[in-house]
Image (cartoon, rainbow, N blue to C red; front, side, top):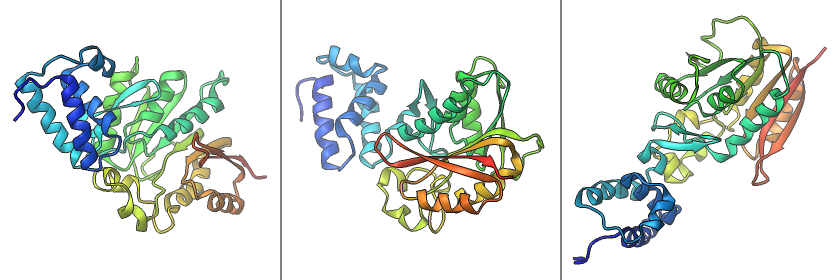
Length: 292
């Protein structure tokens, strides 16, 4: 039994070792984030206060979170927060945790609309936490935004994040919908954005436990080859896109050829450009051009 007080330094050291034994990904980072969250500090403050002893209640709260993380529950679900682009978003197991690679989807959307002075109609299909469309609305409040998701709890979380982050609400109309099915608007959109489920069903169980055991499978499962929802979006989007509109999709690193084949068969889309993420993997499909 440890006789001297538990300090920030000793807690971090012990927790890092414990997480390594439990095969927790990024053990030091996980320990720092959870301890900073427990103490109401920024991570940098932990090092400024290395010798600070923890109170009994603080230790108890940290232990509870430590146990959750040792069972591979994602840090973002424990802290109920994930940083994306310029903001922190509330997250829960009802929504996917926003990924850094999805920022490329947002960056591509920004590139497509940043010099447009007229008001555009923009929709995101499958908003999850709302990280993409809320970030876009924050950057360009002059446009009209719609966000859909099959999950009602996800829509509630997106609405909560929009209320917290956006200066004027509602800038975004949120709709519970299975892709386009429940949309009541008939006006075409200038930009359709989506990060659809694109992981093949048969490999879901082999994903790291942080994903397979805790994140919503409905937001991950892309069917037999991972392209079920991508293909559906490509088939249905033309009815909701204006003639010069753009469809932006996040795709799996191995789905480029399949997406290019779907576009080639389309009676509406003319071209597809595949962008690589910062790891050099195919990640974003930019699909445009109405065929004459």
